[in-house]
Amino acid sequence: MPVTADGLPETAAPGDPAPPPGLVVLGRFDETPGYAVNRPQGSDSWLFTWTTGGRGRLRQGATTTSAAAGDLVVLAPGVPHGYGVEPGAEHWRFWWVHCQARPSWLPWLSPYGTGDGMYVVPATPAALHDRVGAAFRRMLADARRPSAERPSADPDERIAVAHDSAARELALCALEEVVLLTAAGARERLPRPGLDPRVRRVQELLDADPGAPHTVDSLAAHVALSPSRLAHLFTRQLGQSPMRALRETRLRHAARLLEGTDLPVERVAAASGFVSPFHFHRVFRERFGMTPGAYRAGGSMVGA
Image (tube, rainbow, N blue to C red):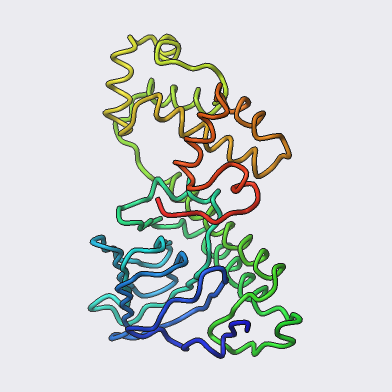
């Protein structure tokens, strides 16, 4: 039996379960002091929140964050969480979406991971707020599209459930736009004080050609450093070794090829710099929680 917005509470309360996995459920709330939700078991789906006014407070495991206008906060499934109006705030106005997120979103979100499966993308530039808001409104309209499962929908409902596959895909496409806009906008604003220009140059080399046979020696030669000095400097400033950064860049490149081309998986591996298809399958599954074939087929992103 299909789930409808009629079967969901207008406002989640302590003890209310999260929507079942596999659905796209969303709404826009403006809550007053005292509003709070606590889910000791977490959720089976991802929760995306984007604040448009007031302040909220979200907890995921042992990690807590405050959310103000322009902040995107994402909670991964399977971790105890809670959220509500921040103490002292007059209200919290926010969009929220429960869904199974697309695997391709993880590289955009991962720089903003704060621990325990929480991702905080702060301070979306004000110039992007209208576009992000429009994406949420489009998502809501697509979720309310009449379908065979539900011929009509009440436009005044606070909660919408995307029923058919077209509505779900359209809603997820709009949410993907939100993720890209907020993550890219925040990334452009993140200050990187003291980042050595040689480290930045190595990053540019990896991004420009992830499939090239890079080594620490070849990268060091490009920036006139010894391999040991580059490895130390890169790791100290970016928190990972050059080769670990290269593997991450190659995996992101492979994910894009799987999404946007019909190349066989073996050719995707080779084009992304992986000599061994077996090794590619293993590290891809470790990174994305599924095989390359399952990723191409549209499997769901799992927690990092």
